[in-house]
Length: 267
Image 1 (cartoon, rainbow, N blue to C red):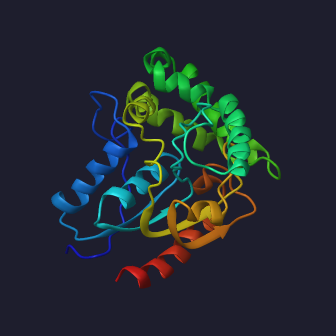
Image 2: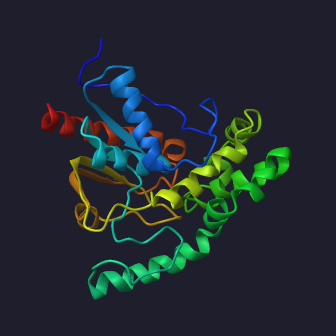
């Protein structure tokens, strides 16, 4: 029966086993669809959201714009400085000289690491033709898993099995969703979905699990507190960008700790 707590996981529009995207759709619009599905279609009065990667952006938007999302748990967060992912523009937003210098340094790394994102965001159809080549799709997808994994202690082959990697690739190739899965990047640019408005805060109780992500270093609790109402912050020694693959037990630990805290604050 509909109630106040609910757990749900689903592919996003344009991705495998979900609706076919007709046009680019970003995380903000996806959040709106998810909220409508949970509250109006399924009839739940309130819910809590967890997300990493794009899911972190979507969960943040749910907590910021949709009142019936009563708490959010993240491994990836949004900024509100006005800076777009992969675009060097350190003059946007009111930030301290120290934060500005840190942002410039971070954006330099992002500019190198996010060249793929700019291609997917501005010219996704070009890459989308990899859908005709399973080998091309595999190199594009597996390359990201390699670069974003925490390989300081374990090798890539120890982190991911061949079956896991082939499954990831086939989820795009077999469902013909490689091209439409790229559209989230273009949609994010169109709706400015990579950031919150300048000065905005997510006022829902927020939990964060900080894993050593080679892609983007996780924010400190103090940095996160500028944008979110942080009620729980867990820091882990390993995990990478996809902790549900690399360290699933640690990820579940972080979610569990968040639920214990958030449940008491959102009843």
